[in-house]
Image 1 (tube, helix red, strand yellow):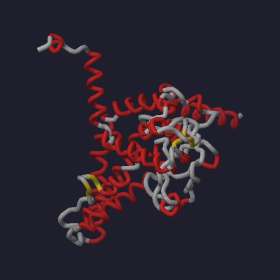
Image 2 (image 1 turned 90 degrees about the vertical axis):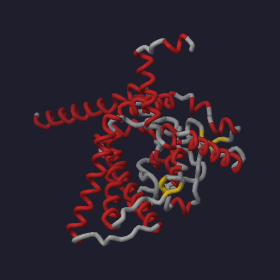
Image 3 (image 1 turned 180 degrees about the horizontal axis):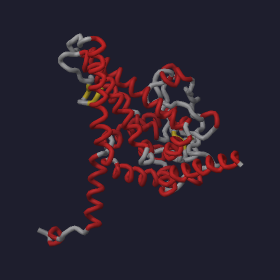
Image 4 (image 1 turned 180 degrees about the vertical axis):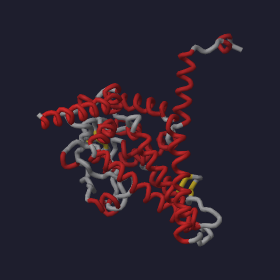
Length: 340
């Protein structure tokens, strides 16, 4: 045995190891090597099909590049925004165990049991159906639609309510898009979306749990929910600089990844568009759908006027508290002036 193997670890090394293990334990599926490899393969297919076109630079403009620059452009991955993505991700994942249990472990079952009890009271008992594959597919689809609707509502409110925009602004402060940007969020924002997801799963689980006497599970492929698998494959493309378009007719039903490029653009015509996570149904219904033209320019971030206040890790972490203080102070000043 090497003598260095017997040396005890120092407190800093132990903390670093624990932090790394914590991050790996909660690593999202679309940041694992198989999905990242699939993302690279799909991007390579786009590069081949379009003769080197289809990727955007740090300014959101399309350009023709070599394959390596297409997949891993230096101006994007060396950008300060990409480095801040990493810091915000690590910080949020480190704090995540503090709220995961009460939000996901308690809220989802509580919602499910409330729905089952309510339906049982209203209809005096379950129809006690037998689950089959078509029912499982329907359960998966209903879960997706409920989740997408709740996600849309939360996301819409974050853009329209100043106090919530102060939190969500951290996500939109990304000046370049990488797969990790999907998880660039203030540590206060995570519980909001987790609570929405827990309620969605609880609502769908309650409805279908009440209907079926033998229980029901979502339809799966490779032990992954069928709709989560199908739409998860392009999930990392939503925050990726490569333009992944769908045919226009399909984009009216499903969000193509490039439609999220629009959502992150600071151009006025792109403001407050494409709020949903997966489908285009809710954006069509409420008039917030925007299907971009091929290679439409989408400069990302908050825009020149305010970007400078949300550029570093510290600015993004403290930003919401600074904005809330300004709102409260401004409201107090206005009230005092009105009284005078």
